[in-house]
Image (cartoon, rainbow over all chains, first blue to last red; front, side):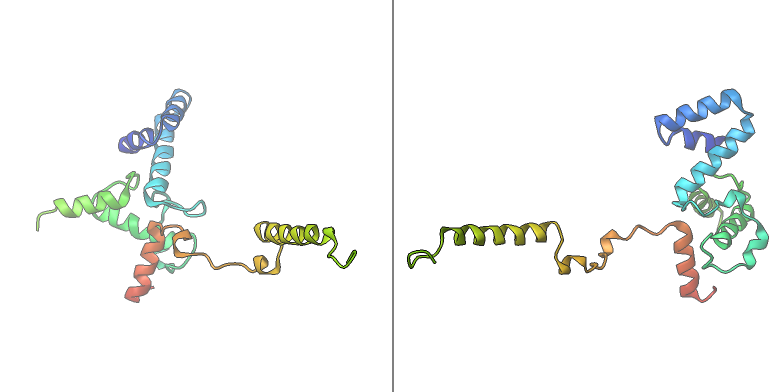
Length: 106
Length: 63
């Protein structure tokens, strides 16, 4: 979640100011989850009606891919994150998975 | 016709018609402008990660 805070702050000066202000009035974990949500939406290019992998549920793996909310896709990404020992709060899930695969011994 | 010559108002009327035709085309008042033009491929927004995954699943037959 620390990486999510860093990534979210780096989006823009306005976002950095928002995070700073939130940290002064809310618990760290709440702000970090907000940052993770924002960073995942940004990195995956999601639409407003699509939830990022941090809110995915593994039972959604049973759903079809053409669901406009993308719940199956979110669950697939969550499954890969957990399988590679990554956090569901990764700011850029696909890049983190790719990097882990690249680093893994063959 | 005035004295076997075209009225001077004829030229003004013709210029007015040209102006009205040009302006209606520019302002899209003519019937042809009411036809919707198909969006070009460059207007389509890029696919996000979920849309790409759905297309890949469809291609692989795993949907």
